[in-house]
Image 1: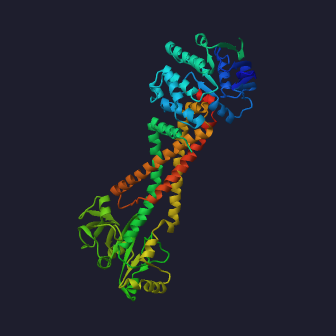
Image 2: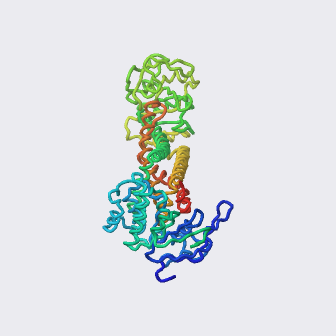
Image 3: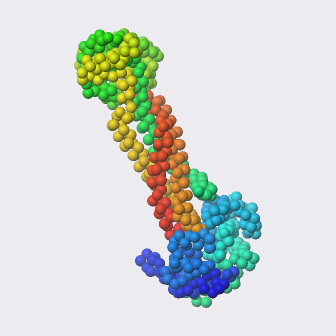
Length: 225
Length: 368
């Protein structure tokens, strides 16, 4: 692993069964992401970009190859260790926001903090981040009362509340209109620039990818550019 | 120590899905009601019989050989026994009754009115009065209420039309009472009795008189009133214990299936939420803890509902069939029913919860 690499992927392969068919979603992917880097992965549907996101995030184990995140080897990890990785090292932002619908914004964020650290109070730094994200006035609302853009900003707040080593965003603007997409992308860029947050963003939108430092293209389970 | 957020999530889940929470609570409550009502019925009916036996005012009771205090329903003893018991030292008064079954829980009881009145200080008439004609019948208030009867009404029984001559307060001997000689004639039990009651001149002679009669009446069952009423308990009735056990077993199965179905559905509809929790690093035990606590709350709510419903079933029984059934409220069974319900509910949640925590996170997250 290079000295400043946050993520190092070597000859990563991932296969799974889809009915009776063997799907080879990743066919030898190599990728390095440096600390503090904002990388966008683009590619058509079925190119393997979401599978890469899931493997790097510890949501699913790789079939072969080597993946390290913040110095931790995912290939050797047990399910419990991957749970620990998701708790402390990785933050997720999903296309569908994935907020808990029964909890308020405040409690969605508290819940994640409590799972990771056992603390539930939102300290000054967190409250300031919420203010920066423009959701500090919406803390007592349930997700259904928020716009798509607001929900995604809450999801970003939830993802970074435990100061993860890397923020993984899967099509974060996929469910948003142009205006909200711009706001969310700007938030991600600010997090990267002001806090040095390492970000890996999956997108099929070239305009969104332009917010990143670097764009990686995938096709048929391989990185092509 | 579980975190406050877990409880918050449990609370919000229950509040968010009000209809499911309500239906599950009601369904669990029905199982608890089933348990409490049936235990209450067995206890209430035994207690009622006990009270009615006490209302007779006898100190000693003589039953036929091999008979049961609960199932007393024939007249195999000779009436000559009455004279024998009545002539023993310290026996102030002896009287007897004939109990004849009418099917189900119904019985008709024949008494010697004058002697019975002397022994029990008499019936308390709510309306009407004692027998004056051979086809007169006395009923208690419960029987009158249940069958919508009053003084002057006719009751067909044993191929005879009885005329209600009096309605009495409940709590003495029986609900349906006729002159003993008429009942003996109608049922072909002339000169025979179901039970003999004896009243002593001084209660301090109870033990000695009891011993004396036991010695003299070999084969007969001779009891003091306390010994007799102590037989009206579930512990002395193995059949009742088995029956209660079966009912509780059914309630447990009922509760288990309900919670299983409810939580299975709940977990299915919350697949995505479970995926979210797993994605943010919640461990299997954390998720299991949420589901187990949610189940515990449902079981507790169901138990409370069941307890309240048991008051309702008692009120309904008291209103519609007070003469046939008496349901007691059984507070000592509330914690037992709660514990059984909780155990059944947890049993019901184990598989759905196990399935939930083993669910693939990606599959869960893509669930709509």
